[in-house]
Length: 356
Image (cartoon, rainbow, N blue to C red; front, side, top):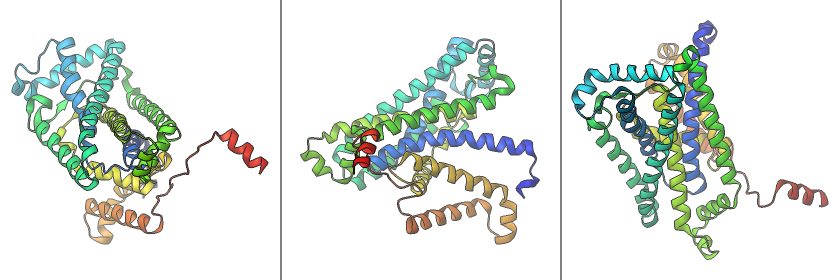
């Protein structure tokens, strides 16, 4: 039973779950902008999460090694990826421990590069998004994500191939407080992302997205430039997913490009379906429900094995599938359905309501 869990371990479990909630909350918020507000069939979302991880493990880590440790990983990729990387990263971490500003500079540079790299790819993907039908576009995005994963996984020079790459810890100077400090940082980024998404959703930009989603022809008639809106959404959402990918890599202090499989995309979709599309609160609620179920099933996995004689890993997928089916049947709009657009300020609406 959960009450028999050691309090210290339970606290660690809650903390680690909260970090993942914050990171994947940012990821699903970006997916909600594309799917919930614009209606884009984004089946390749994991690609932009992977590009954020690539920016850290494949680019800024190499810059840090050349700058702080005097090591060029590209000079001998096989040697670096086999043994040298741990010693090299330890040397960089030692510098970051003595100079927190260097660590913070590395962290911020990584996030900016992750956002730029993913955002640029998002803009490149906007080309097909303007020409293909929705079903073909979904297939193209899915294939593109798999192409990025396979190429980067089997190219050792990127991030040590199938073995993965260790990345420097920019918060090593926090010492024992590091796990709680990183939780605070990820939650701050989640709050910032939520505020930005809410501001976009309740702005004329957000209302235009819903108009394009519901009646594209009518939106064109009223002068909305569909091309520009799609480019902006793909760039913004992709950049945000890239930041989430970078935060995920810093959480693990390790990146393996093979981890960014299509399942990650569809888990994001599952979270969004459960919580509610077109609603940022619903998106976060879906992430919370997913991780709550995941952790409960993980805690009781041995009890489940004894009762149903099914491997707990498969049982988790069964439970999530049942939950999605039940939501689609009884609450197709999700736990938190989409709210009507606010075309007037709250103050004016309340005044008009009072006069009525």
